[in-house]
Length: 171
Image (cartoon, rainbow, N blue to C red; front, side, top):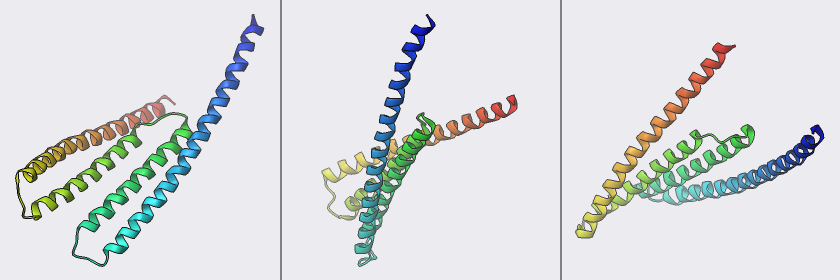
């Protein structure tokens, strides 16, 4: 009976090691692609900034560069999440919340830029009014979403601190 049990454990361990290697290989490929994407996006932001230096009075270039840099920051945070997942062997929620937070802030910047174009255009019509109201609603939803994500991050960190404190007390 002991022999049968050890015979079934060996194929499971082999399969487990194989799947772990495949998983790590895929994480590595994903990480490499994220690094290339990040470098390209950072280069694009630098080009936008350089070309926007000709017109210092325009805030549109600043918004576009910040938008691009926030995208790079999101990619870096996703890369960090992949690295931590490979190291720990488990998935952590907090980096995804941070990526969501950055994405929400990025969207707020884009909406602000679009809204400022509408309000400064001087051609106010029914369509402009609809777009403006929709934008304000989206900004409100994003504000609530940001508050929820920040509260979630704070709660996750407090929970980690409590667990760390409990494990230190147990020793």
